[in-house]
Length: 365
Image (tube, helix red, strand yellow):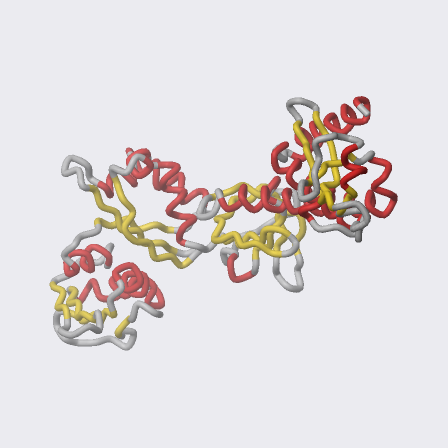
């Protein structure tokens, strides 16, 4: 029996090493599996089964727990034992007490053993899924480096390998327009969310999410990482342009300069990782008029009139020669400004004359 116990605990140790599962978790699953097997084989309740597993002491035992009843009153030999029979084991046993009888492993029977194996196998799969889910949830809202495993040219979706985190799909709408992907190549993706499913964790990833830009700046700018500089808002049109508002409580720190870096090296490093995407970094302000003026950069603003009510709307006046710059190509600059600030913006030239491309831009566009 000692030999079989040793083999059992060696197998347990191997599972712990190879599968990365804790011994405590495996012991609980195995205990539950054995209880199920004994219940099925002996037609008893859980209260009648005692399973003792102690890896440290190398102790492994399974017993039936039966009620001691007066002689002649046994209705189920698996749950009850006559008083006289119990007293052959211990003379002090009396009716009304309970008696524990160790079982030999072979008495479980073939069916019981198969049941135990099935539940143990199921428990291990569940543990691996939970471990995988926990590992990926710790990376939620972070950047991970994946490997492109397959490209579906018809559906436009890309399959990636996340390592221990399993696999994920990068849908077409989460891909940056114009980016080229190749099988076997590394790819940095942003983990938007991780949810549990029957097949394991489902990881939702993106290359277009503003969070990707935020995390890249945290990696490049120590002042953001340590909290000296805070990213207040990001508006992004992936592959084309991003506007990011930053702020610092430290008056001695210029948050915009910190993000740009000496000779523009910090922002350049992020731009390179985004495939040349343009990035405007502006200073955030509690004064919404000041913030909107900064957000319309590189255009200069004459004044900002916040409209009354709860519509979050404003009228912005810019010099005539700055109108096209303020609106941007196909309205992009104004659109990103609206998203960044949360305000609907009506851009007007200082002279009051509108060209054919002028319009009001909302933060939903």
